[in-house]
Length: 265
Image (tube, rainbow, N blue to C red; front, side, top):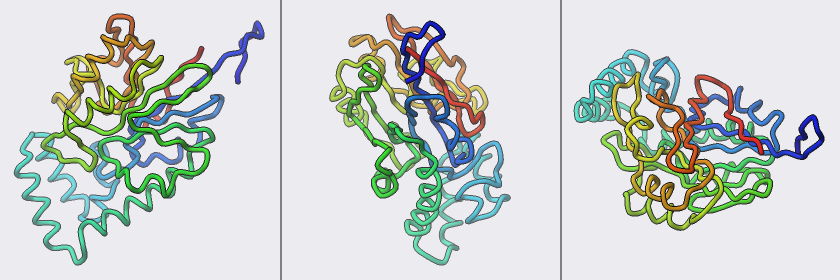
């Protein structure tokens, strides 16, 4: 528990999202805080800013990474899938096993970097079945669940909604809405994806709208949490806006900034 100059006790929480392999900065993300919250996307499959980093270029090389990024950025998703399928056809070994091996290597390093206590939920590129193997006793994994931190109730909903990208943890709108409903009324609502508001879901670099949740937006309007925290959109048109009584905050693309967002009360 931190304290103010006047001696009044305060709680400080650091929040990160879209870690994408940045274990070095993650190891320092909890410094000066009473707890760390992680909103998912630990895995780095492909770095759109540096095509030499991630599982994809490790398997197929930078030139092929350049090509698939160009196709996806142009929203030529069918061509990107066909191109990826051709690359995988030339690989000696089981695709799922190779990906899992690479993800396990990243998870071992990233979960070891989490401070105690950490509260974490999944991103759309994560593989939830593996998390319990790597989460230590100081890390609490929550999805459609609540936790009390410093006297405030935090709700957590992980994953993303289905898209043409077909990332590992995309679920139906109905399943996502059920998790939002299970969380109920909280002080701080923590999700990986943002509510479905154009300014919050538009990525200014990728030049496309990512998927946000209508159920999340409805819950914010109905239950009026103090804060709604999320990530997912790396370069949003707007990082922060108020919806009724709720301050909605994109906590930032931690992979590139290396800096957590701080909440203090």
